[in-house]
Length: 222
Ligand code: NI
Image 1 (cartoon, rainbow, N blue to C red):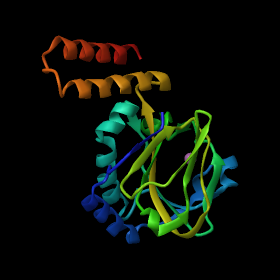
Image 2: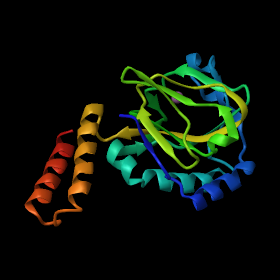
Image 3: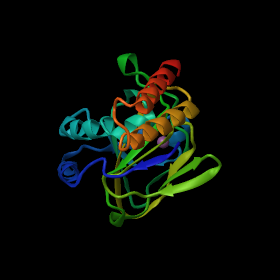
């Protein structure tokens, strides 16, 4: 499943984060890439562990991790730490697949889902689309600032070359409590159905109680 979620950051939160960006310390992105990805990676990254980073991460993480659509679609068990990525004119990140395992110790996770939260407006740069090969199709995404795309970490993807301006995004990974993508989709459909039915049925109606039971029991099984 590949979904775009709008306004994960509202205008105030986006203003706060972009206002702090000039204080971020950037490093060459190739330093953190694997052997193969390094050959195609041309960007700058900030790991948010230092200087102004934790303040930015706090705002981003609370909005991303508590977003109800993301939670319904991803069934998150663990989140990676967040990265900021800046791609300037001439930069990009060629076709690659994300590492299956990231982090060590308590921070170790299997990457089931990847997400990109756009911090730059599409007007701020030319090129720089996130291109994802998913379900036999190729999708090129360039979302509004504050919007997020969630996609399977198993897919090949790239960041098209930025031809002018600068593209700044926040990226991260999720280990889901539900390992299989088809099972996550089933749950997502049922959770959406429940939200829809909740506008027409009472919380204690047999319909909603049965659906809640089914969702809970499927979560246990998955
Ligand atoms: Ni990637």
